[in-house]
Length: 215
Length: 215
DNA sequence: CATTAAACCTACCGTTCAATCGGTAATAAA
DNA sequence: TTTATTACCGATTGAACGGTAGGTTTAATG
Image (cartoon, rainbow over all chains, first blue to last red; front, top):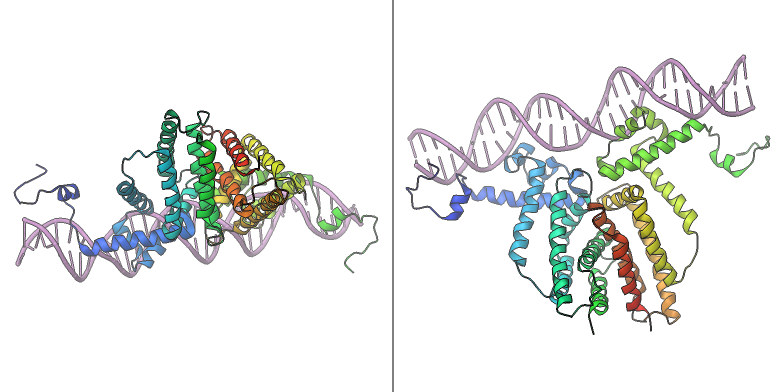
């Protein structure tokens, strides 16, 4: 009884929306809101950012904002969900070689220096999510875990192929990589412009490769 | 006219306390408060921690706490000031060789895994201080700057002495070190026990030395 | 012993904040 | 055109928060 199936409209997009009416105005609003929220979270963090201030920035009252995102937490989760969707498109289920992985990370750092706003948002939220009961804690934890496992897998294959020294511990090396990237971002957040993230990370990666590869 | 100089009491400790009466009970309270505050800041961060809850933990009402620390910011700054005092005792104005510096950092990481509570407090505050107008922002920024300059100086001397490859950029290497230490702490904060900070940092430092020294 | 500061307390205040209630107006679908 | 849903708003609420006012008791000092 859930589908009357009389009209010609049966495509998946409509089916997933399930009784959800769309309006172009609403979609645009959602976009504005997510952008404004990211900006506020980037400045003040999630906890200190004011839900009402975000509403005001897009020309809405607080109830007006709540119409789109029923609570502050929902707004945060929507931002994280969108990040999932976007990175899902880009990365895909590929399984790169360890050299390609490292080169890819360098590219990521390069790209990050261009889009400072988004990067700042997620770096701030990442740091803030270390506190107790933070609504984004599990998201960042799982994300770090996934990346770590992926990288460790690459290094393990490198060892198996005889390209990487066997005494290298894949999981530890993966943790080291993540630490360096997150740490660099923290330093960069504090003094953007004073620090050359790309140069530092590149020289680090070069030294890393030289240190683990079998010549 | 600032000193009446009639009584025999003229030692510096008394002079700096300047009309301040001491009581053993108060000193003990101050100690309790600082400890409780660090615990709360470690759990929730400065912003989300409740001033009144800290008071309650040491068996005081909020005004009772305010008697000792006139505001929440004052309490935070007192914690930072104490850290300054303690690290001032330990480090001193020494100027170690770059090898001694790196070994010292490894020792610091080792020591940190023992005293998790304090470390967590400062790591959380460090991360939180990245947000706008955070009361601890300048403290952490200046601290990072000081450490960075010190390390860069060590590396520069190493290059001058012909022990380190001349293409190494001292300031960038110093930034890399700080990034790694802060990043490792973030990862460790999220899953303490799951990550072997000492092992990861040690192998990183070993590879770093091998990569920059002239053989 | 007298004085004075320390060591607290109860009661209260002003603000900020996320969220609710109960609506109205526009608009898309049947 | 009817109907249901979207897209909002003004007023309000309740809780949490940092901080103040004004007091009393305890204890150190001269």
